[in-house]
Length: 172
Image (cartoon, rainbow, N blue to C red; front, side, top):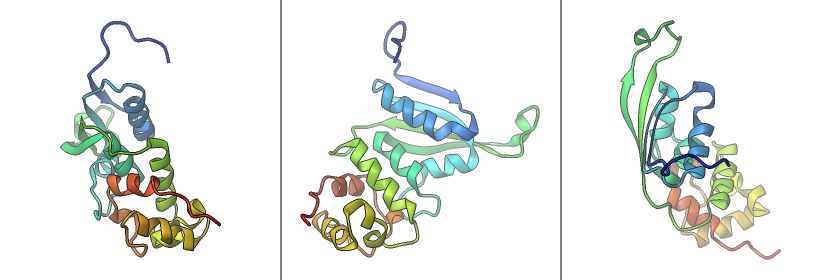
């Protein structure tokens, strides 16, 4: 990455292109650890996904990965009539305040998140079978992390995913 001139940035205010908002935000949070807070304008549906908590219908990969970096909340709605030309979607503001991530490795945690949501409607025992090596190995790791193997990914917090990622693989 190229050095930025001046002091490291501590805030991000952006109107992100809707089709790439999540990867842009996550990459900036990873590459710029000095960012303490962000206020971004995104498509309303993306705002809902980013700010969703465990158990909410919109909760998924973007929610968990954004939560790795900080507390994410909806900060307001922006109707389509304020833009010209008027888009076919509503927009939403999302505020993020950085906090320390849960203990564990980000890449390993994100791999578990991706695996858990790849088969969203399956239990974690089934959804994580490939990641863990087998359904039995997934169950063993889930139990070692204190997580019910019958739960689904949308019921776990980012801390739960980090704890699960840190469990030791099961010997064959």
